[in-house]
Length: 451
Image (cartoon, rainbow, N blue to C red; front, side, top):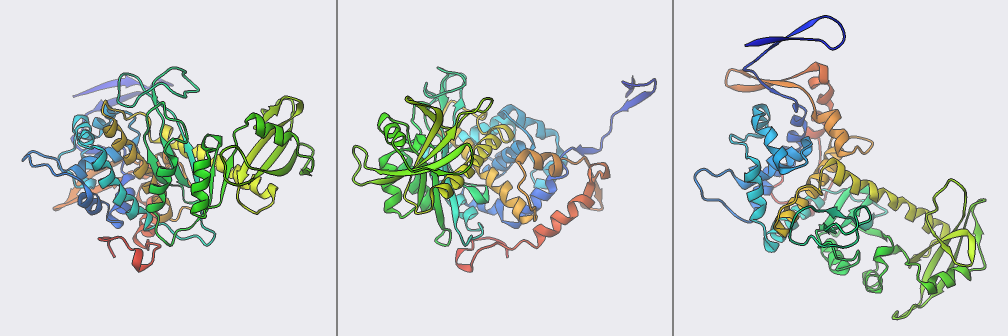
C-alpha cells in the first residue's frame, strides 16, 4: 500500500509506504532506563507496593506505575494520553514489559490507594531517594509554598477557595516543601481547595523532617506571608531551624514599619531597616526586617504601600537569624526559584491534570509525579549535567530520538537515528551513569541498591 503527496514548498512528490519495522520517537529514554536500573528502581518499587494482584491476566503494579511515569516523561497530560505508548513496542522492549497497560489499568491502580496505602508506599520511597542526596557543608534551604490546581467536574476535596485566576472555581490546594539547592521535592500534600496556605503546616513539616537522613542539615526555612503563623514560628524555634518568613501586612505591622527611623540605604531605590515586636498571642519578641522600595513608573513593586507614605512600598519579614538585614533580604529573594519548580510540575509534568473522583487516587498520582520530578533531578546529577534543566528540556534534548527496533540473533537491537544525535551524543551520559557512585555513607546506603 502506498500513496503520493506533494511537498509544501516546491513541485516534488513524496511516496508514502507502510513498514513492519518497530519504530519509536523515544529512543533516548534508554538513557533514563539505564539510570533507573543503576539505582534499583524496579526492585524498590515492587518491594514497597502496598498490594498484590492475583488475576492470571494481571499486569504487575510496579510495571503499571512505571508505564505512567514514562508517559508523563514523554509529555502525557491526561490519563487518556498514556495509551499513546501502547503502540510503542520498542519502548516496551526497553522496559521489559510484555503487556503495556492502558489508561484504565493505570486509573485502576491509583484507585486502589487509600490514605494508608499512600503513606505506606511513598514514605519509604522518599527515604530511598533522600539516601542518595549529596551532603552540603552549608546545609540545604527548605522552601515552603502552596499552589492551586483547578478542577472541573465533581471530585473529592475540590472546594471553592483561593483561586486568583478563576474565582469561584473548585480546586485542590496542595502544599510543597522543596530543598532548593538540590531541586528536590521533600514532601507534598494534596489538600482540599478551601484550605488556607498554613493549614496543617506544622504536621506537614514534621512529616517532611522525619524523612531526612541525619547527615542532611537544613540551614534555613523560607516561606511567603501565607505561612505567617505563630504556631509555625514556635515549631521552627523548638527545632532550632532558622527561618525567614514574609509577615502579613496587618495594621499594626504597617504602623511599626512606618515608624522605622534608621535605614541602611542600598541604592537610589532600596533601603533596609528593622524592628522587634511582640504581637498579640505571641510569647516573645521577634525580629522583623523591613525592605523599603521607591515607587517608580513602569515597575511593579513587590511590597505594599502604607496609607500615609505614598512614595515607597514596604515588605516585612520575620526572622530569628542574626545576619544583617540586607543579607536576609538577598537570601529570601532566592526563594523566587520555588515558583519555577511549581511551574515545572504543572507545565512540564502536568501534576495538576491527572485527577480522579477519589481524593486519595488523585493524591497517589500527584505524589508519583513528585517522585518522577526528583528522579529526573537525580538523573541530571548522575549524568554530570553542570546546569539544571527543566523536565521539558530533558524531554526534547535527551529523551526524544527516533529509533528502530531490530534483532541480532536472539538479542534485541535498538538502532538510534544519527539525525537526532543517536548513540554518539548519549554515550557520555551512559558512561557517567555507569560510573555513578551514590553520594552516601555506607550507613545510609538504601537496602537492596546495586553495588
